[in-house]
Image (cartoon, rainbow over all chains, first blue to last red; front, side, top):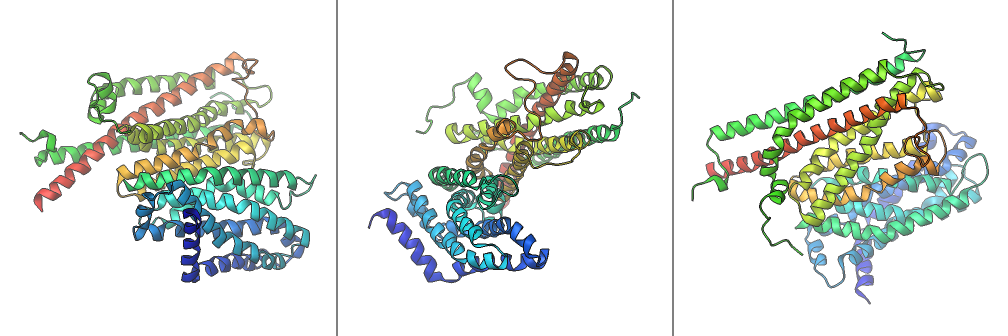
Amino acid sequence: MTAFTAIITRELKLALRGGGDVLTLVLFFVMIGVIVPFAIGPDKILLARLAPGIVWIAAFLSMLLGLDRLFRADHDDGTLTLLRHADLPFAAIVAAKVIAHWLLTAVPLLLASPLLAIMLAMDLTSLGRAILSLLLGTPALVSLGAIGAAVTVSIRRGGLIAPVLILPLAIPVLIFGVGAISTGPGPDQTGGALLFLAAISLITTALAPFAAALAISSGED
Amino acid sequence: MIDLGPHAVFIIWAYIGVAIAVAGLLATTVLDARRIEARLRALDAQGIRRRSADPA
Amino acid sequence: MSIDIAPKPNWFSRIAHPGQFVAWSRPLIWPLAAITALLFVVGLYFAFFHSPADYQMGETVRIMYIHVPNAWLSQFVYAIMAASALGTLVWRHPLADVSMKAAAPLGAVFTALALFTGSLWGRPTWGTFWEWDGRMTSTLVLLLIYLGIIALWRAFDDQLRAARVIAVFTLVGAVNIPIIKFSVDWWSTLHQPASVFTPGGPHMPGSILLPLFIMFFAFTFLFLLLHLVAIHTEVKRRKVMTLEKRAAGASA
């Protein structure tokens, strides 16, 4: 097993052993789908029209709130400092952590999205598009989130600042994510939005580990 | 005063808002500077110096 | 990789050593203030008494004289912050993080003013206070980034460590600036595209360009003045913190 995959396996093992975390995020995701119909009324047509936005807001908030767990535990017990001096380049270690984090947070959301589709009166095509857009967009969210988590890791109660920092930068992801499900009246541009989403994900996934690694290193000296 | 047209209220409020904000910026900048200078003077009066100012 | 040579005397240490910088730049403050005040007086005079109404927008064009400078400053100040961030990360320049920290609240206010004046200009001209088009959305995003950076500065205890981390984040956020610039070209929606610096020359008559340029310089000098004073204050604030720590240590 290479060092890279070893890091991913370690993250997965630790998280799954801990248990509660992953479930909590999925619950939060589903609960947004539950409370929105209470807030805006059970009109199915309205719900179906707003469903793409609601699914993405739910995914957005769930992923942003789960950011802190990327680095905090390792920072608190000193593992992060050890990892910085490992043979594997630190950016690669961050990338491995990001991949593990995506597996732990985005995949459960994808699996839970049919539940949201039922509660928000989405039809099957919309659900299919929603899953695809989440699949292509969540990597961008975890990558950007990693930058936020890295910047705030050395702040004692920095957990709430990271979402605030990342939200403005992640707005394009939200725009194209929703656009990939439905673009409202007019010609269907979901294909274009999907491509933009994929592009953003590729760029952020490639560059964010370096920025995050730099932020952590700068904060520790 | 010159005639500012039918939308005068927007023009006036835009300029007033900017004036208030600029005045606020100037005020906080100056007050902040004064506060820190006063603190420096107080510390100086107590005789606290930087290491580089200590003799030998 | 690290800079071992002691700073050369003369010009380099004058801009690198915070104490020296404060000393030689202090005499600049009052002249800067005078120039700023003069530019504002002249600019406002021209804006109200010596320029025509626009043939399309009527008198509301006068809002442009305060909207455009603030919009320009919102991006210019971020560019200053980004350049300072580079100074912190690449050269460990001791004044760079002070410059970065001092610029953030100023940039936030100018961005908020750009949105405020733009909103009041939009209502009579386009019929709406707000529209989610490319430029307005990305300027709002810029304001949120500024506020996030200010929150970051307040969250850190160790300001020196904070500077390097915030420098990284500032550079990441800098990607928004080109988006603002080109948003009016990429998405042709509500906000008008560039009309001053276009390949064919300005689209506006000289009588409107003149107050615009004067106010443009007035606001820019205002920023330079505020930034300089804020840098001085921050340098002194750090000196106060060091001295207070010494005092606490001595009395312990």
